Length: 297
Image 1: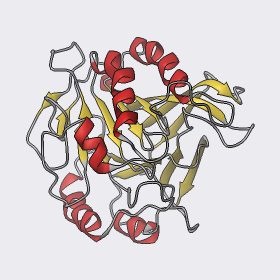
Image 2: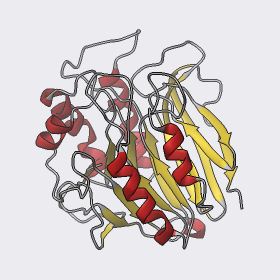
Image 3: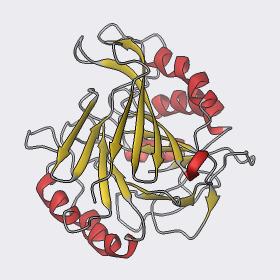
C-alpha cells in the first residue's frame, strides 16, 4: 500500500515515524502519524474506491467515464482538508497497465500536493506495474504483499493487500500476511483499529478466499472495530458479530442503477466514525447523508 506524497511539506502532511513494513512513495514511510488537526482530535480521511482509471481518458464503461469522475472530485477532496486519502483498490481500469498508473498519478497530483494518498491494491491492479510507476521507498517485510499502518491518537488504520492475480476476481491475504496480523494485533491494543482491504468478506468465488481465517484472527481482538473494503461497487454498512463491515461505493462506475458513484468522507473520532457519502452520479438519494457508526465495546 504505497503512499503518494509530494516532497514539499504541507500543512496536513503526515509525519514519518519508525517503519513497520510495506511500501511507501517519496517521503512517507509505511508507518505514518497523522496530526490531530480536526475538532476533538479526530482523523479525517477521504475514502475512495474502485477508481478504475484507464490510459485512454475518453474510455467509458457502463455509461460512466472513470477518468472524468476522478478529475471532477479532486477539488472537493482537497477542499475537505483530509488528513489523508485512501483508495481502496482497483485504482487501474482492468489490468493495471503502466499507462493507467501514469494517468492516475497525474489526476492525484493536486491531492498529493496537500495530503498523503494511500493506495490499496485490488484485483484490477498489477503490483509490479504499480510499483514501477510509483516506486516504493520501503521494502515490504511480506514478500509480494504491502502493508501500511497510519498512526493517530483516535484510531490506528491498517491497510492490507488482498491482490492475488491481476484481472482475476478473487482475493487472498495469504498465510504470510495472516501470520503478520497474528503477530502485530496483540501489540496494537492501546487504541481502536480499523482495517482496509480491497476484497469483500464472503463465501462467493469472487470474494476474499481466506475470509474465515481472516475473521478468526480478528475475533479475539476487541480493539479491532471495523473492516473497510471495496470491490462490490456498492455502498453498504453491515455487522459481522461486533465488527462493522463497510463496503465503499465505486468512483469509476456502478453495476446497478440503485447504487451511487462517488466517495466517502470519514471522520474517525473517539468512540466511532462518521461517514458522509458524496455521490456524483448513479443513485444520489443519499448524497450528503452522514451515517454514524459507534464502536462496540
